[in-house]
Image: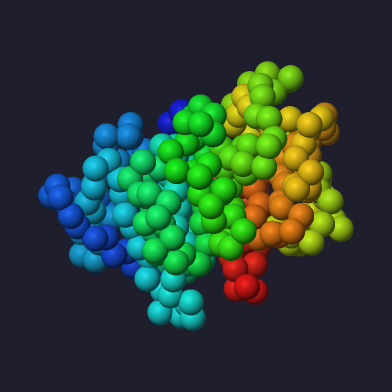
Length: 271
């Protein structure tokens, strides 16, 4: 579900690793280093330091690469941006963790182009609508899920569910927007996404759709849920590196969120 601009989605976004932006097409835009604003698809702003950073918008898409000299694997994590303001909060966490990443709007890169990049992993962001509205996100799960680690957030989990025959339906409990809920997880699950977290932990929810539990795909397993039984996380039974969460780990309403992102990164390092 697309988020409104709130104090937590308009955040000061300062990275520990320097940005390198590849300028193409339109002229670069300059912003102050303490600004972060998520605009409609035709206009995106990003936090920049004019001394070391640059920005270009390529056909409505932003490409950003964080370079980290201490990172042994120089391949990027590719972030598929489903036109959601929270995407860049996810990017902030990865930047703070010193991770190389590239961001592409869901209609600015093809699955074939994504394959040629040989990404270290893929993060599918939240976004408005259904998986059918998510550009290459759904096809990415179908074509790359068996071989490339994928972490889906909100819309990303719904894409994973639908890719394996699940039904994405309206939540029987209605729309939640900025609601903080306890999330319970299976401590025996081997995906490691929630390692070190309390059980339950508190998570932010911004959604009206869920992957239906009663007809959940056989190839997937539910790894986290709400008190009322809604699916909050799942992974593939065979391809454990393919997983997603319905809640928003990048929200300030998810105190353990950065730890979840860090656990995903640790799993990449184990591959």
